[in-house]
Image (cartoon, rainbow, N blue to C red; front, side, top):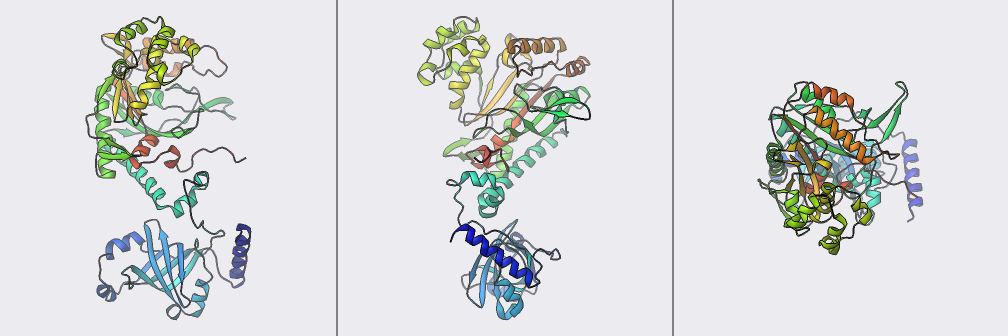
Length: 503
C-alpha cells in the first residue's frame, strides 16, 4: 500500500473517532508504574505467586505492536524504561472499550490498568481491566528502520529513531551516565561548577573560526564562544581555585563523522597544579567512568580492543615523530633550526604515506611544521590512550613554556583511536609573555578578511592582577561518548546534529 493511501486511511480513522466523541488527547490518566519497575519487582515471580497478587498495575506508554486474535489481543507497550506486554480481552473490558481498542494503532499512546499474570510462554503480562487512549498518532510508525540504509532520516527524525531503535536510546542514557560520572568525579574533588557567557565580544580561548551575530539593543557584534577558557581563568584569578564548566562550543568550520558545528566540552581548571597533574586526573576520571558505565577498563570500539587502565603512555611530540619513523633525530635538529623544510619533506617517509601541499609547508615555522607532520602521520596511529606532550610554543599561545626548553610548552593532548579527546596545559600566567604571544599570533595570521584573532585586553587586565600557577584542560564529551558507546559517528551521540538542507 502506498504511503499516501495509508495516511488517507489514518486520517479517516481519526475523523471517525472524533465523530464518536472520543477524546484523542486527554490528560487525566496517571501512570503509577513503569515497565522497568514492574519487571524488576515481579520478573522472578511464578505464575502461582502472581495469581495471588492483589495489586493492580497502572502503566502507560506507546503501542509498539498489536497481535489481534479477534476477541482478544496482545499489545507491546513501550515507556521510558522499556516494554511490557498487555493482554486485552473483550469479555473483561466490555464491548464499548474493546470496540475503541480495535480502532487503535501502533504508535498510539495507551493507559492500562490490570493485574499481572504469566502467559503460556511464561511472559510477564498485564491483563487489562481498563484502558484509555492517551494520544492518537497521526502517522504510522515505520515498519522497519534500517539505520545503515536510511541514516539521513535517522538523524533528521531522531524522535522516530528513539521510538523504534532501543540501542539509540541506550546510547543517550549512557551519554548521560558518562557526563554525570565526570561531573561527580570533579565535584568530589572540590571543584565548583560554573557558567560563562556563550555570546562573547571577542572570540578567544582557542584557534577556530567563530559564528558571528549582532545584538540590537547594545548595537554590537557578538560571537558564539569557541571556548570558555579566558572566562574560566578570570574566575581562577578571582579566587575560585577549582572550577569546571560543561559547555557548548561553536566553531564555524567543517562537518564530518568527528566534527559538528556545535559540540560539548568539559573544561576545568585547578590551581597549584601542572599539566602532569591533570594527565593523571584525566586518566583516572575516564577510567573510573568507564568502570561505572561499562563495568570494565577493557572495551571494544569498532572492532578494536582498547585498554583504559591507567597509567597511559606519555610521549613528547618530537619523540613520537621519531618513534613512528616520520623523521630522524638528525632531521629533527634541522627542523628546529627552521631551515630546509621543503628538502626534508621530500626526504622523509611522509611522502610515501600522504602528499602534503609544498607551498603550505614552506610557509610554516619549524614548530608548526612538526605539528603538521604529527597530525598527518602519527595521530592516526595512536589507537590506545596516549598523551602527546611538549607542543611547540607557536601553536600553544596560552600554555606555559617548559623549563629547560623555551621552544616547547607544558602541554598535552590525549588521543584514543587516532582522535584528539582532550587538550590541556600548565597555564601561562605571565601577562607580559601572554601579550607578546597574542601579538605574535595575530601578526602571523596576518590581516585576512576572516581573521578574528583579536587581542583580549580585558583578559590581559585580569591577568595583570595575578593568577596563581594553574593547569587547565578540556575534554571533548561527544568524542569520548563515541568511544565509550562504540558509536562510529559523532551524529550518533548528538540528539540533533547539524544537517544539510534537503535538496
